[in-house]
Length: 319
Ligand code: DON
Image (tube, rainbow, N blue to C red):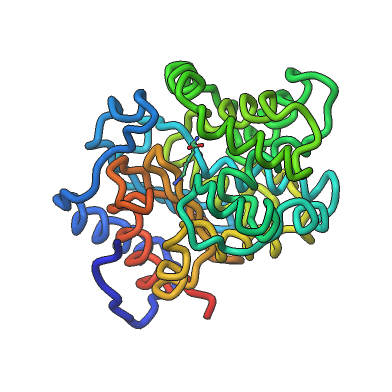
């Protein structure tokens, strides 16, 4: 749900302009009372709906924030981007193309119809079926070895040690029958070649990692900076794979609303049902907003509006 399509002339990326764009958008949407917390995972319904924070980090490592950048929410589907980058580094970008595809499904993020339509092909790594399959592709003999790799990669993207929010993990693990069914279907169609329930559980854990708005902006800024964390200076993911990660985000990052989002902003982005949204302006900045109330497609209402305005003000649209 995007409220407006204003095309303003872009201001250069100076400190004053960035701070002004952040504050203007923050204030404009503070009173917006639309959407509601996700509640199909019981722990998410209990999260404080008033958490609202914005962070923007430029590719030269400058950090700008407004609002609540301390409160953590679960990363949820935003995690899918970073496991995707990891698997592309490990197995090559072709592995994604061959195992699930890179097409927008036009269906909700946990659609079973979309799997059935092409027997698990013509999917993408950002809907649940593709994401659980992507997690199943991470090399490793044991649960702990696979999880350790994912955790380390996320920490490098964020530039600090992140922790799993145990209440969210427990709550989703108890109620993720639908994702287990999705994983079994992807296994039945030959896309998941390891234990589908183990892949689902590791996927559930990756979705439960706690992040604040600054962590998310740092992860986005690392993608904006060709895979190199702009603050720690570490090359976290291969630069040559970043364009393909961003293309998948542009295609499917906001699920069945990905087209509307791209039309208005031009930015590769990814939402999560925890209320986070990241967007990437390649070579310029990564931006993130946390605000738990979601629209019907599962995307944060305030986050979509605030990021669209800020990016428009700062000339973030690459088109
Ligand atoms: O698998 C799920 O349903 C959640 N762990 C993640 C879904 C999600 O974030 C979709 N986002 N908009």
